[in-house]
Image (cartoon, rainbow, N blue to C red; front, side, top):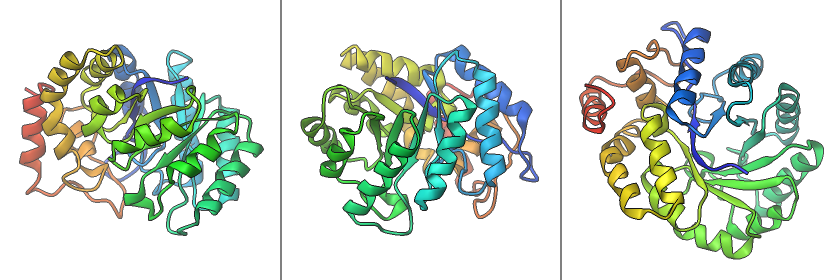
Length: 292
């Protein structure tokens, strides 16, 4: 249903933290021009945790309208409250998104049965394609392959963003789920190996700064051209690493500002990339060829 390089889009802000609609417009057009295969709005990289509900919905609406059907739009609508996740997903559907990305409920630390019931309730409440999102490093819970397999039998749960960084999860989930159930990595560093192992693509932070290269990497990997994919990945390796030198999206927002694509705006409790790390991110941008 979805494949390739799907950018986990940042939310551009001015220096005072207000949303920058013009920069958002320009970023979207840049992604479409340079081959990004889908846009994920209001995920972790989009700072969904620090925007108000109205802002959250406004950003999704702006992205859908600007994209205008040219590539798929996936909206982050997860929450640690099942009722809130249902409400956000319902609204995203009315805005015209192609799918919803639903992070595991954070902080609550639900059981596997709780996770199953949470996702089942959302899927039954909103008739839209839904993608599970497992990122234990941020949520303090792990959606295990056996639970994924139970959820994969629900018709509108179409895939999972697997952000554990554990490549063995690909084979485990594929062995338990039907062939049409899709897997996307949330870890840029393992994108090539993840796709070659049977995944369909990446929901990518690196694609914010190197959209063309991430698209080409995914095209090669999906075609089984491991050599070309690894050659492209080699140029991006330092970016994959250093865009996480501080918590995402701190480094990637600084990088986009350094590239002149938006202002240096970010919301507390996130702060601007520290001066000590700026040379390392700048070096990664230079090595990758996206900044001269």
